[in-house]
Amino acid sequence: MTIRLVIIGGGPGGNTAATWAARLGAEVTIIERDIMGGAAHLLDCIPSKAMIATGGAVSATKRFAGMGLEQQTAEIDVDHLAERIDGIRTRLENTTTQLLDSQGIRIIRGEASFVDPHTVTVRTAAGEERIEGDAFIIATGSRPRIPQWCTPDGERILITRECYPPKIFPKSIAVVGSGVTGVEFVHMFASFGAKVSLIVSRQQVLPGKDPEAAAVLEETFLNKGVELLKGARAESIERSGDEVIVKCSDGREVRATHAVLAIGSEPNVEGLNLEAAGVELDSRGYINIDQHCQTNVGHIYAAGDVSGKLPLSSVASMQGRKIAEHLMVGTKANHRHLDYDKAASAIFTEPELADVGLAEAEAFSSGRKIRVTKVPFSSTAKALIHNDPRGFVKLISDPNTGVVLGGSIVGRHAGELISVVALAVTANLKVADLLDSLLVHPSLAEALSEAAE
Image 1 (cartoon, rainbow, N blue to C red):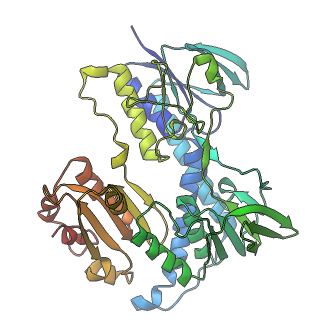
Image 2: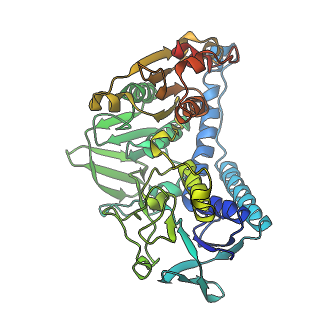
Image 3: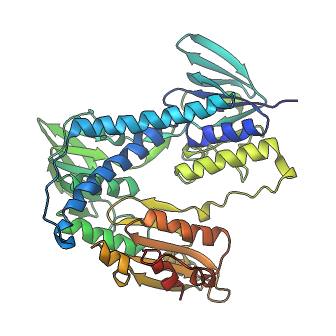
């Protein structure tokens, strides 16, 4: 009997599950209320990286003098930048839609709500439709969190999705939040020449990340003229004409032409009527899942940001694949559980930061014995060729077995280079395996084999 799979949400988790399940013989219906490909993905992640790429091109011109070229000044064409971002978004959405269509997956544009554990109603532009399924996946994603003490206006007080690019390009901007999104916004707007202030509620940007990596980023920010307000917690943002005022709990305040909130996200569960399906949420409002991404209701799964795991598109996609395999094949296949501790992540600042696996601080706090080796990029020929020797490669391994447990990279193309370490961590490779690999010379990757020594 053909399994009828209904997926709510067309982001990385939902559309990956749809394509894998369809290949395995399921009859798949996918419901999306906003943008196929996912709002968090195509309205936040991809546009921000496109903006960062343009900002990086601007920054590159400032290194020309050190590379034997005459200094140049790049001017920003905001209208063209907006068209470029919209073009990338449209192309990716169309690619996703075409793939789903090619596999015979039914796409419904609308909002879904559970009637009972095996039925949803979908509100579309044409009316309401009732759909029954044998299995369901909730992949509705998340949205930027807006605190009660702030009311974004879409012009001067912004949420992240209103910044690609803003209606009025900022001369100065206060960034509230020093996590991954916050520091990327600092880098992005500083690259475009804005005066940036970063409100850091703790004493380190990127709390929870490698302190050495965070220190490199902080130094870069300070060299760019970024104002860091450490130990400052924003408690209000008010608009005064063409200026915004951010007030902090310790009495400090920041005045700028714009402010952007980058203080996390919250799950999209409203309107799903999960009570009718019997699906339970955790204390934070995310959907509880087990190692198979199943909810407490066995035939209902959850993937992506709404599941409360790592909010990464790569994680959502892998969850979608694992769900399809578990649903369609189950224990008949070599089904490995998803190990969230081995997920690689990157922060697209300048320099880039990336990490995977066990962190040095985590090992230290737990009393675990590790071997840490660190190589600066300043010792590699390729970094000098690029006139950008910032950063380092750090490998963490088991001192007894030599197995690679984790790593951190700070520098150019860190997001690409971390893939080598991620493979080593996932496959339980040893530092000797990295050392014995014949890597390209000259390349930044040579720092990996040097760290393996």
